[in-house]
Structures are given as C-alpha cells and as structure tokens.
Image 1 (cartoon, rainbow over the protein chains, first blue to last red):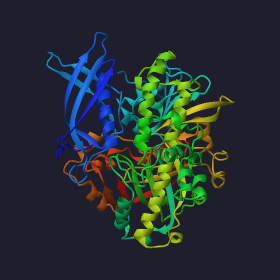
Image 2: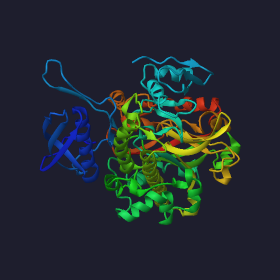
Image 3: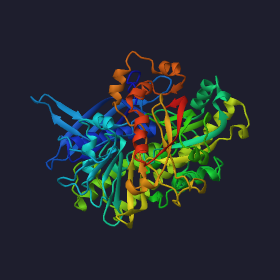
Image 4: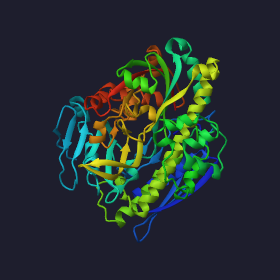
Length: 108
Length: 481
C-alpha cells in the first residue's frame, strides 16, 4: 500500500471486531483497516491493541490505530491491496510461549 | 500436501483422476514444460479441491496460465448445473469482471514513431492509475451509481462516453442481466463512488501496441486488424466496488455452506446452491460489479481517446479509435451448454479465464458470427499480447473458455528480489517500450520474467484448437498503476 516512512499519528481511529478465533479476528481487523484506507485514505502508522477471549471462546479485539490520511506529495504509495484473504490464515503461539506468529495473505 | 498424479491424455491435455471426494476429474491444458514448471505448486491441488463441489459438470479445468489463487486456482474453469450445483465468490475472485478491452485505430506504427513517450505521458496524466486511484469523473450520487450497476457500459455511452457500436462489441453488451443494486452493501457503494474511469494498480495496465504479426487473415480482417496497425489495450476491473462485493459474499457463503451441508476442502471455496436465496443474491450483486467494470473500461476508452487526440493533435476521424472487443476474465455466467448430447443450464465460473465462444453463437456481434469471438490475451509488458478466436472445440471441451494471460511464475516478492539493482524501466526503454508507473515497486513486481512465456501459453490453446491465434500485438508504450 504505502511505505510507512513519513506517516505520523495525529489521527486516532478505534476499530472493534469480534470473531470465532484469533485468526478470524486478525483478518477482520486488517480488513476494517483496509476499508478505512479505501474510503478515507487513512493509514495507521502504529497501533495499540487489546485482545480478550470470552468464556465462549470468541475473541474480541479493540484496536486504537494512530495514523493519518495519505498525502501523495509526502508519502510513497505502493501496490493496491484488494482484500485480506482467508487463505492459509493462521495465528499460532510461538514455541516457548514468547509470542504469536501470524500468516495472512493479501490479494494485490 | 500430496502432489497430484496426472495422466497425459494428449499433447496438450492432462487428467487428474477423480479420487476421494472429487466428483469429477481435473483437466489441465498445458505442454510438458508448463506442466513441469507447476511442480509442487498448490494450484493442482486447488483444481482437485474445486472438483469436490456439488453439481460440478464434466471436469474441474485449468488453462495453461494456471497459478495459485485463493480457493479456486487462477486460470480455472468450472461449470455447475444450475439445478444441482453451486456458485462461489472464490470461483470469480475479488476483482469481479477484471477483463481486457482492445481498441483499434487508423494509425500505423510509422505515424507515431518518436511520439510514443509523449502519448504514454498523456495517458498517464489523463487516466487515473495507482493505489486508490479516483476522480476520473465527479463523485457519483447514489442514484447515478445504481444506474452504473444496472446499465454497465450503456450508462457511460448514455453519458456521451462512447457509441452504441461499442456496446455491440462488448461481452454481454456491457451489462449482465439480473443486477440488483439492493444486493450490494453500503460499503461497496462507498468504495465505488469515485473510481469509475480508473485503472488501479498491480497487473492492470493501459498499453499502446502495434499488430506485429497476423496468423489468421480472415479472422483479423473480420476484427478490423492488419499488420502494422496501432492498437490500444486496457486491462482492469471493478476496482474497490468489486473487491467489497466479493469480501461481503465470502462471509455470506461461509454460513451458507454450513447451512446447506456443503463439505469444503478449503474455506475460500465457500459457496451456495445457484438456486438458493444466497446464490441468487450473490449473482445479483456480482452482476452489479461486472457492470461497474464494463462502465469503467468504457470510461477509460473515452479518456484514452481524448488523451491520444490531445497528444497527437489530430481530429477524431484520423485516429478513428474503435472497439474490437471487451472480454471479462473473472466472472460467473449463466450459460446453456451441450453436456453429453443434452442442452444444460450451467453456471460457468471463469477465474482468470476468458470466454471463447465459437462461430454461430447468437451472443456474438453479427460481424464476428462467422469467425467466432475475439479472445484477448494480454502478455507481460515486455513481450506481446495475443488476439485469438473462439472455436467449436472450445464449446465442446471447455464450456467455451480459454486462458486469460501469461500467468505469474514468480511471486511479487520473488520478482522484487530478482529485480534488485536493475532498472526495469530502462531495460524496457532499451527494448523500445516506453513505460510509466505510479507504484515505485510495480515495475519490478510486473517485470517480464515474473510471468510465464505468453507465446507458450497461447500455443497450447492454439494447438488444442480451443482458441486459435489470430494476431500478435507488440507493446510500444505501457502505463502501469
């Protein structure tokens, strides 16, 4: 989409998604962020994300995205992302429990 | 993952026998070298996966430009019975009615010699391209956009952007019937309101070409093409509107598949019976996106004409820009085909595949009735594109379908790696091709080596007599998004 360089975080957008699994929640979150870009030109430069798993196993994600709208004079645009796909979508805990590893394929 | 076993049926055709839950065999059109290049590619498994879907007819097919897609492979053709089969957004793809439009001119190569960089600059200025490109025309009101969704290319012609003859030379006359603006989400409207007449990015392009060689004089003459003639080709689709329709309906279909107890080997194959409320609603929304794409390419043709006239400073009659044909290559269509001697109502999914109707089909313009439908096959930006023709053999073997392009052989990241330290634009300039691109990395991602050899892909479908070659088009100038 765009090189991150040059993006500041004056605008905050909060996105809340709920899904059946961490992988689906990640896909929905990215898809929401893509929609913000497609309709408002908003690019998130950094994010603060809270993930909660309910008793039913459903995953709720609240993401505070800090970024700004693209400015073609200052920002370098790359290839258009059409969609965040379900293909090979995975979120797994890394061995040793130190973190998470995600696979997300974008259609460009 | 187990590599599928293939039986070679003829020089050009390979069969993937039906095993496990496959309802029909897989059938791949390729020569030995293209087949060997597929190697451990997941796309053959995807051909097998599609064969699991209910109501699939004859075979799950792949054209020689087959490569990995999401769910269905790109280069895939699958026809389903309307009564017992399914429709799947994954069998169409995100860019609904991504397609190709070929325009002819009265100019010959010598008349634009030395002017190509200027023409490309003008096209680059006048046809919005690149990420999120918009603003070719004023933002459309909701009411106006609904007209685009129902009327397709005719909406643009009604606004003065083209002629009625253009509609006659567009697949489905530039509008699929059954489009229902009520089947489309608010989000799709938001994404679609200011992108009519824009190219987008990635593999989309606008190209000035010359007819380099004619292989079939009779068909070329019917299509109005001759050696040395300047042509223009555009490759693009339904922009953000179509991506959103696909996204929305993948979710609808995920629950529908469960509701109709359809066992899916891959969730991106999510589908619903063609005759179900979900299936019908998807087809109504997909038709809206297909029509948006036809309006888009019609607008781009208009912008192209203005740009060329401006840059060449000639009157319209000297340029005489006219439509040869416009084809969709990401679409699901309700068509009647002969299956085992009977006439069957089908829903043909072409994902990275082109309709290739043979002579005599009533869907074709009268001028092309005797020779068959023009099939437009864009190649990579450094090699060539082809005009081929639909055939009776295509009607008999592939539900009137053929390949759609060269097909990627390298991922975008592989291409970027290979292009490091090289200036692709200068390499193309040295080969006599002027290039302008919005995206800094687009040229590297789209470099000629990232694609299969289009000559070879086209030769397979020519050899199999599915879509015989008519003419080769050599690029002179390219605008990439």
